[in-house]
Length: 158
Figure 1 (spheres, one colour):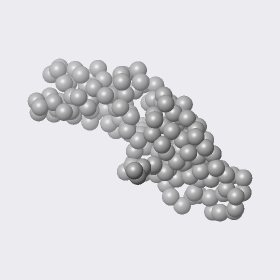
Figure 2 (cartoon, one colour):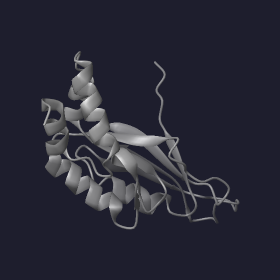
Figure 3 (cartoon, one colour):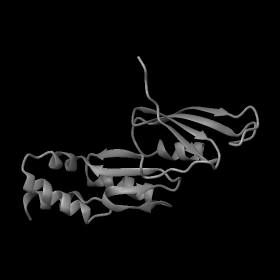
Figure 4 (cartoon, helix red, strand yellow):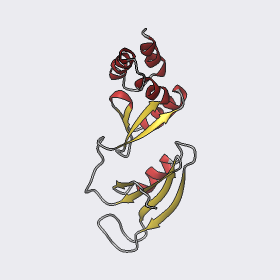
């Protein structure tokens, strides 16, 4: 069976980024670090070429490919958080050197965009009551870091 593994392109920071990411979520680890064996635009022999890592049980690769490509928010890593404490913890860790954006999005210090979202939001957004969904959406659009309590208040009609 085929398997898809996202490969993130970095300019010399692949190993540093992967080592940071695996500290954020349970069931995460560095699986392999592969060096360049020849000189390339992405690195010299002995430099880290590729890092294989597991993030929350899913496989990823981080490649030191050089300065040719940059990340954009068009691709992001979505984290469904169990509660506000997890939202706050991840938001603070990713925000250190990063850039907060609207509606729970944050770009980390390496340029990777993340969506840090309380799981409760997904439940609220799937409600059959369009008025509840509209209130929650309007509340979310006013937020940078998502606040579960304020979203639940909007959901309840307050």
